Image (cartoon, rainbow, N blue to C red; front, side):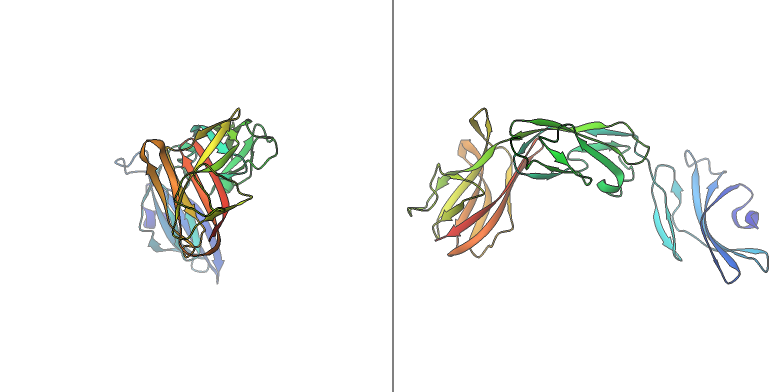
Amino acid sequence: DYDKIYGKKHNVLIISSEYKDGKIYMLTLNRIMGKKSLTPFAYESKFCCYDLKKNKLTDLGELPDEITDGASLVYYKKNFYISVFQPITSIVGKGDLMMGKNCKYQLALGTDFTVTPSNATISSLLNTFVFKSSDETAVTVNSEGVLDSKISDNAGKSSNIQMRTRNSDVTTYTTVRTVTVKAWHSKCVASTCTSATAMKSGDIATQSNTIVIDKGKVIDLRFEYSTAGSYTDLNSGSYVATDYDSGIINNVTNLYIGSTGTALQIVGNSTGTTTITITYQTSDAFFQGTYNVKVI
C-alpha cells in the first residue's frame, strides 16, 4: 500500500498518529529519493488512514507545500501539527552597550545579537535561549532577556551579557553585549517658559520631581550621562515619547537643534498633570525615564 501511495522510492516517517473507530490516522513526512534537482533532498507530506478491519491504507490528501532542507513549515491538518525546525549553529553579539542607571532593556534579535543560519527557528527568547550576567552587581538579566540596571551603587560598573541556546545546539555561552551603566539625568536645553516655577534652560529634571511647563510654552529636554562627574550630551540618536496625555502636552517631537544635536520638544497644551516616558536609543546606548509633568 505504501508503494501505491508514495511510489517505490520513498522513506516514510510517521510524524503523528491517532486511533479512532478502528482506523489509524497518520501524518507522515516522506523523503523523496528520486528528485535530484532539490538539494540536498526533498520531502512531501501525506495524511493517510489505515483501516485495521480492511487492512487497507488510504491516501487522504497531500499537504500543499513541499519542504526542502533548510526551510521551515508549520501546517495544521485534521488536528495534526507538523513543524520542521532549523537548528542554530552560532550566536554573534553586537558589542558594547551604554545603559542608563535604573533602566530596563529588552535584548532583541538583530539589534543585540544575530544567529547562524539567519532562518534558524526561534520561537521566543524565553523558550530558545539561556541568559546570564557576568556581574549582577552591575546589571541583571532575566529568562526573557530583559536587562535591569536598577541596582544601588552600580554606576560605572560593567557586565558581559552572555547567552546560549536552551537545547544542545549551542552549549557555550557567547557575550552578546558588554553593558556599562551610567549615571544620568535630563536637562532642559531650551525653554520659552516665564513663570517662576516653570522649567528654564539649564534646569535638571529627575524622575522624582515634577517638570513644570507654562501653558502654550515650549521646553526642549536632552539626556546627559556622567563619566567621573563630567556630563556628556546624548544628542546623536532620536528621542521617543510615549504614555502621556496629549490633551495636556502636545507637539512632543524629536528635534535637531542647530549644531547641538537632538532633543525632545514638549509643548504645554492645557493645564493639568500627566506622566511621560522618554526613551533614547542608538545601536550602542539605551536610556529611558518616566517623568511627572504639570502644565500651569
